[in-house]
Length: 138
Image 1 (cartoon, rainbow, N blue to C red):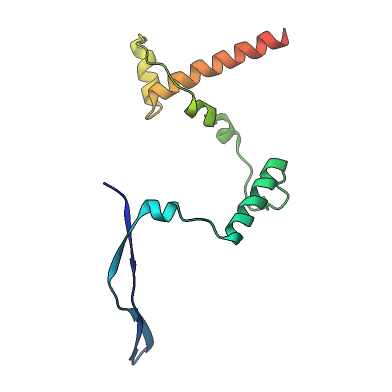
Image 2: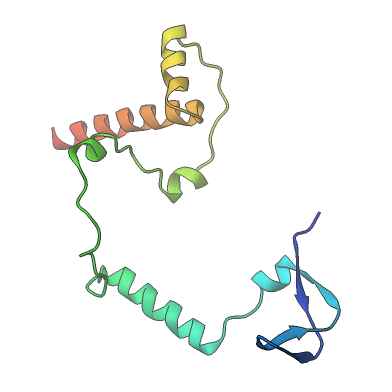
């Protein structure tokens, strides 16, 4: 099933009322596919905005961002942070394996919320990356 959004077409008609003037649209609904909306070419202004934003990001320039209204992170928030899986992790092909773990380990992983299998991969990836860093520095 394709995603569909609707838009109204037709003329605008104004109707007077005691509370003031209100407008309403008369017309028929036209079916528009989501892919038509997503594949619509960017305007010249939109392309320029994207280009400027990409240049600032590539240069690491965040001087235009006002951070004054963002409160600093607390020690509890910092302690609760976990590794962010970047795009490389999502694009890399994963292998299917069968893994046996102790029951208490599985319960602990599941107690952290949905995604316990992804969490196992993240833990193993972190250990692997730490081991590589240690070998490089030696």
